Length: 298
Image (cartoon, rainbow, N blue to C red; front, side, top):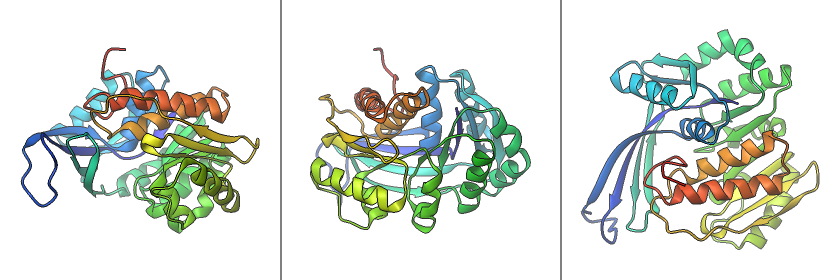
């Protein structure tokens, strides 16, 4: 797998007692490496999927440490470059139940990565089997990667964070093998209020919306309600319920779901089975105070 996306530094605050949005909250604060595609690259490695990561880190000690940690986990970091403002920052507040209560992110400067992919993209794409692309970097990078993937006949699996690029270039979704997002992101894409609907309502919206948008296959995760899926190529659609677990930290669960689901799809599993694999890995991630799966003993 080739994963193309950003590295972030995650500043995560855990409230010890009931979280008060307008008050001072005693708890714990952690500084960890994150970013959806960095997390996906780590998850792939942890579940035994060979992975190469194309990204950026800051040209300093923290950046070198992030790259060394990924390499130590078995991630191929040949195409992780050092650049000024190469890493973003994500500030997250989690309430007493481990649920995300609010967040703010600062994006990196993706210019250096775009230049690198323009120079080395053919070489990188020719040697991979499938691609995970973070669309929120820039429209230029997304368009470049999709063109390269089409040139070398490689499937692309897309992941998003702020939906900025996709909302301006929905045509990019025509060229992905599967688009996986959460209920809020699906609502923005379909221009419907889908934040608190039932799985039945979401599945109906997904089947209609993905077909109209020309998306080959799509999955919408719904947190504690599970996930719905629709494959417009095979006609497969359905609902996967969640697993009952004790939640410690919800951040990273979506990335774990994505990683396991895509790994299953690349192996040729049907979408229904891929969604079940994603649900299982997400459930394990929910039970640990970290952003990646298997940061615990099975």
